[in-house]
Length: 355
Ligand SMILES: [Zn+2]
Ligand SMILES: [Zn+2]
Image 1: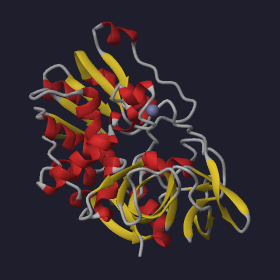
Image 2: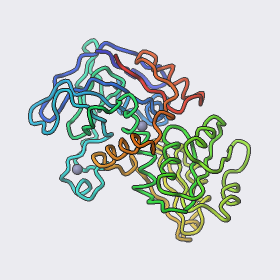
Image 3: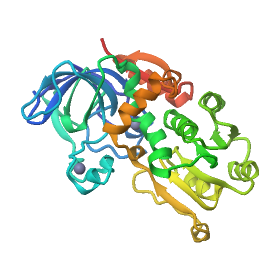
Image 4: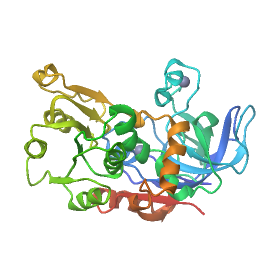
């Protein structure tokens, strides 16, 4: 089968012929149906995040159909449709039983080498830029047979990371004000999370006008182009002193600082963006003294087995936008063009589709 492999940072992905092990105990193999091209993938390529090891099997957002089932797998059979969670969920540890399975304490978070290209081992978790992928059944969320996987794949990362940061982590209440720094695939979902939560003002900030236009489509109420005006000052003007919540969805320490400076005393800045490996975030201490909070939100504090079916239900009812997120479908061998589109800021999300 074919898979998109990063052989070295700062080089394009290569589409390699890859051999995949059969599923071990507790594992399944999925035939991928759709894989979103997420900025976090690009972070491995541009050095923002240190890749675990190379060659690296790329992609983390996706959905597919079970084609092989290993021993001791419960609740999944060949032909089942699933959306991948970013992480395995044991269901028994403290975080899993406390409703925080995205941070399962038994998730090994150590890459494996169950794929090979020309005899060379490839490091990976559950790579979605691949025709087939091995996954722990504990990372698979079974969804109804009529689920359109080439769309629902975005629930796996972009949608839950954004919506979940608002409803699961920040718990924004009706009428509260919020500002979103960065309106890419995840940021747009922070905006629509705000709509679902009944937020009052939802201020979208970006440097790319196309993304601000998309933010309006997703329900933002105010727009600031940060390359033309000071976002912190504008947020204070619009909200009359600062927002209740600021979401940092870009992944830079300087923007985390802007986020905390944009919230009123008692407000919260929520770090959603993946920060550069090894870099520190600094904020003025006085901001924290005024009862402001600086918190992180990993993967939308997701409870995938609860949240994914909920997101699908909202989509079916026309209350969650997915179609509008997808700017372009491409085959796997055009993955590098999808990254070019992302860098150019001309797409909200590209989705790789498989025959
Ligand atoms: Zn992602
Ligand atoms: Zn667990």
